[in-house]
Length: 299
Length: 299
Image 1 (cartoon, helix red, strand yellow):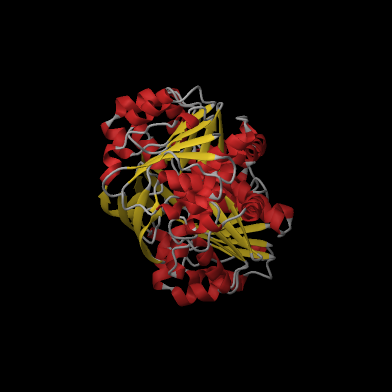
Image 2: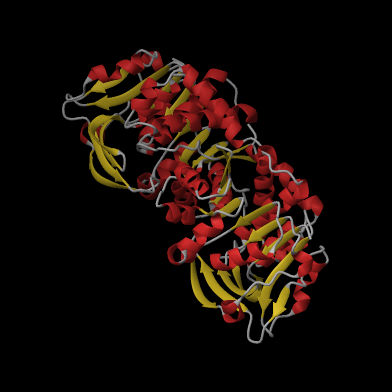
């Protein structure tokens, strides 16, 4: 296995100005692997309930995603429901049912333990640490987190930050973690806790990369129509880490291109509900978008 | 005269997390010309009161800014006071005293009437039209506007939009004008009203250029410390139009470089209160920042 993601698998119910959907496949591990699988063989570790419709993973399996690390527990699959504002950087959570995800204890299958690249999606930092204990010397590990863990599990989060190469999080989370509004200061402060690569996502405003004392900033890919941004951040992470796993390099130029591929993947994610658009994308689509993106920002 | 700006001249009192200042030189025409004068001889048309301290214009005069179009009326100079939030895209206006600016009727001096490049800063769109009637066939005219005119003087604004080459405005203003949250759609809608160049400013999140059916997006220049963003939008416009006036070209490549120079000027503006920082910048500073900016966004 080249790339391992540990995270949520969910059924999402989503309302946006473009419409609404009920119980569509989602969750961080799904959105991540829908993007990363274009670049590197990806294995998922996650949990679903007895209600889970396994045939929905078909598009991932066709892209060589290994789903043998998805375990079924008795009970229902994690469900989330939310409504986006016209400003899609804002959303209201209508309901969260953790269900089988509440007692998720990631067990890394033997065949995944040699994974060279690892993404610890947004789960309890204590569990993120557990995952790192189970794998053998990965070349690169990255984590995402959220306000809930920043507030409630700071010491565990600090412990796992020491052990990863990269942190990928939202601007508001970076600001909250560091108690600092300025993102340059926040990125530098995050790096002092361990990760030598810090990526701050700003939703429709793009992202910032901090690495080796230097910054890189990219806007988002401009879209005339955003259908549903759910999973865009995980699709970004999938494009970013997937590209790194493909290139097997971590120099500044490769990291910048990885941010650009992540941005392209996030833009596809936003063009449909759930995984609709990313499931339909092919290599021609994303290489074309990468070139279009270069033209969009070049001066 | 190469470049003419018509706008406000003010004394600003400003509070930010970095400190506070009282009655510092400001206003759109001042911030604009502090930036544009690096690139092209600039003439100001504006009004001040009897309390205005003319020696404060010295740094502009030294950069060949023609201040002979600034008239003194009996009464006090326009004053604005405001307080910025930690998120500097947000501010509260504490007081606005229009004073002599309330009855500002721009009269373009004979020596300015052949100006080739014109910036109509944020004033009543009826007055912007009056300015265009007084000048002879400029090569390029651009305007800025604000929510107050979009709400209250829409027909005059539509009339002047038909006569300009470019509109430069904030994201919230473009959204309000078009009744459209998506900035791609908003930019296209703005262009249908006349201007073939649309620049949407997003504050700390950068800007979007729409021209000749194509888009260009740039983030802001990353700053570790923002002292005072007052005037950043006008400094952006000064760098943008100043560079166009210097290059005497309006092709897509030149427009993109102009956006980048505008972004650099806005970043300098934010590094001090009022015009403090832009008054101290020299050619080495801004050419250095332009190169640094290219490195910051290149992939």
